[in-house]
Length: 200
Ligand SMILES: [Zn+2]
Image (cartoon, rainbow, N blue to C red; front, side, top):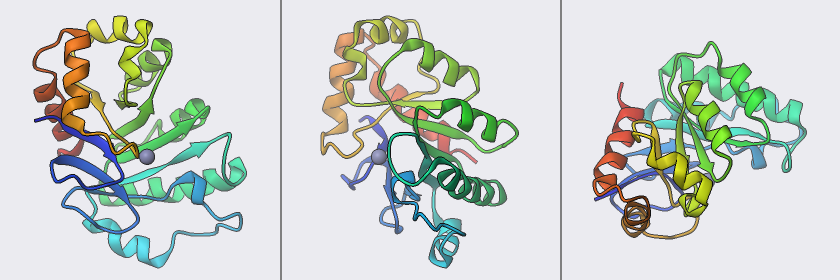
């Protein structure tokens, strides 16, 4: 059975569910950059109350193309990172054209970081792994030839899979990747990645 590093709906397997409430044993408490209010000042009391019970925090992060202005998103993101540091929780990150801002902000942070929804440019994947981050691949990202070439040479110790909000089944998704990349034990590797990301 494969593991899902990022989904928004519970399918009952090995999955990290991103939600605004604790909905599954492995819930990542979401504060999505798209939904940061324009007048953001601090995290809601409810978020701080739920955070200790979450398996991870996020998705959170920065999006240059959508949502509140970048300085406002940045403030909200900093608040989530602060909580993650205090509670030693791993972070699930949404980054749209903000890798350098996120890299700078997380440079001295000790918690584990997973960048979700990677879809193209092996150079970007390389840079993210180089910073020590985990990366989860957007559905079918490996179908791009240059990404597939890169992945075939990788050991998958920090690269996982996700269905995000597509409603796809993770087992068939990882099965398709395993055939395409000719890596027969990819499902087991995907489980090891999620476990490593969540390990205390
Ligand atoms: Zn998502």
